[in-house]
Amino acid sequence: MNAEQLGSRHIDYLDHMLDALRLARSYTDGQKKEDFLEDRKTQQAVILNILIIGEAATKLANEYPEIVSKHPTFPWKQMRGMRNRMAHGYFEINLDIVWETVQQSLPELEQQILQLMQQAE
Image (cartoon, rainbow, N blue to C red; front, side, top):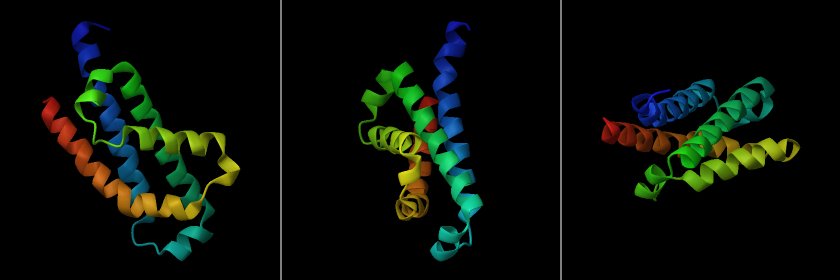
């Protein structure tokens, strides 16, 4: 990988995050919380995409710490923390928190990612 490709890799991580959050939101679109809590397939699909978001955030933070330091209000630590809790405590996942994350945090995160991407262009 040349220097130019390395320099744009952070955009790939942001793209992965954006794609995963949009997928997670689409899986629950039009669904009520009660339905989500009964729908194991959707739960697992959403959880996988939240894991992807956290993994991409971790990679980005590890490989591009200067980007993380330039954007201290971006929820880097929360994304990594949620990914770690889900990956290492799978049988203890709180589906109420997963639902709230999709409904409340992901729309805001989408806007933050889009802003970061615009600044990178």
